[in-house]
Length: 107
Image (cartoon, rainbow, N blue to C red; front, side, top):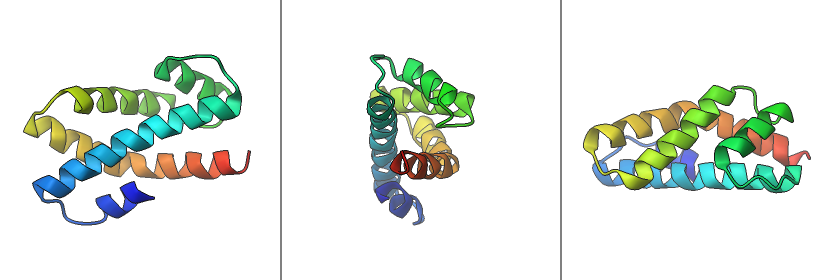
C-alpha cells in the first residue's frame, strides 16, 4: 500500500504532504469500494461508512467518520498544524485501512 510506504519514513514537509494526499486517496477508495461491494445506492461517504459498520466490514465507526472529517479538512485547508494533525491521524488509521482491504478482498 502506497500510504504505508509513505508513512514509514521520517517526514519532511514534502513527504508529509505526499502522505496526506495518499491518505485522502485511500479514504476515497475505501468507502467507494465498500459501496460497490455492498451494492448500496448511498452517495454520502458518512452514510456508506454507517452501512459498512452494519455490514460488519468495519468495527470502529466513529474512527471511520473521523477519517472522513480529516479527509475533508485536509482537502480544503492549508494550515501547518492541521497537516501535522492529519499526518499523525493517518499513521493511527493505517491498520484500519489495511484491515478493510483484507476484508473486502475476501468478499
